[in-house]
Image 1 (cartoon, rainbow, N blue to C red):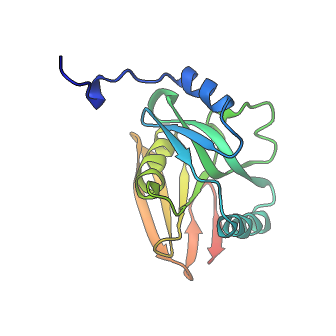
Image 2 (cartoon, rainbow, N blue to C red; image 1 turned 120 degrees about the horizontal axis):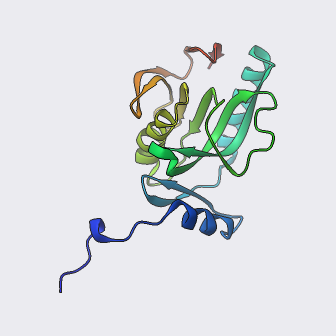
Length: 185
């Protein structure tokens, strides 16, 4: 008998993940990315301050939009992923009636703020932007605290963003259509 390898393990279904997530402790946030359950770090104070800075910038520039924190989205091909974006920018009122894990239609921008945990490089910089692109979210903003930069992803196509621009903290960052906000970092 041969040992079970990663490729022979049964995959968890989306329904099984959602049931697990519903019963998880309030101190843990779970995501289901590329068929794997992942634990998302609870935001620290700096993370919260960055979110508030972005919220203020968005509300001043586009008061008809809302930046919602910690939003559960159906992502990836055929909506088999479940990612909890650090924030989503949507038209005012567009989340009414939506459940914990909602379709990404109407989301103008997903935001990720890196955490100081061991898998942030893969999850925040690669897997989640790919999931957001596959879900058709026009813009993804990555605020990378490790290297003091902002990365703007746009032009989603075939599960990837065709364009990305990386700028250092302190630069003026232009968020493209349909967001149309200039960030003074």
